[in-house]
Image (tube, rainbow, N blue to C red; front, side, top):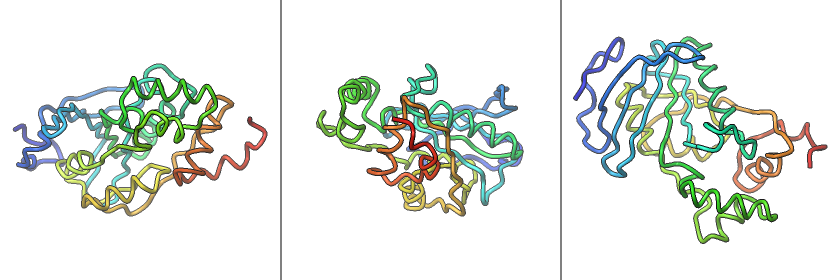
Length: 219
């Protein structure tokens, strides 16, 4: 197993469920990062954490970002995922240090790409995002954050300032042994294409989205 570099100078965790495979510099439009590549032996997923600067162990500015091909790669306005990823990377770079864990296998809140597209088709017919998943016989949110906690442990992170509007994400990290000292809002201005989706997240999934009150005019 590869040894950690820089401030992360001790050997990686000996756990076998999530194995660190590679560390490489990754220059981005937001700043210089190091990409830590992992393999999740339990689920068979390849995972990556982008680390900027010297994050330390306590109160690390952190984003756990669920994979969203349509938003992250294609710029879909159906959701705010792509903008959240960009904002998180920019915030970490501006802060001088931090971690963005990009969680593969979380597409469509864990139901997969094709199922997500089917759910989106149902939403186009009038269902909300919760109703669409249930109509397909799928869970509303099937994501698990255990692998994220194992990655943070491997990086030497014990507590985080979590960039998220989702209180369940905070609760999941705490259950897996990572303390959350602060939940940092990651609010993206809504548009007509995603306002219904965002309101459903607030009203039915308890996401903290106070900025939606200022855009009552959107349909």
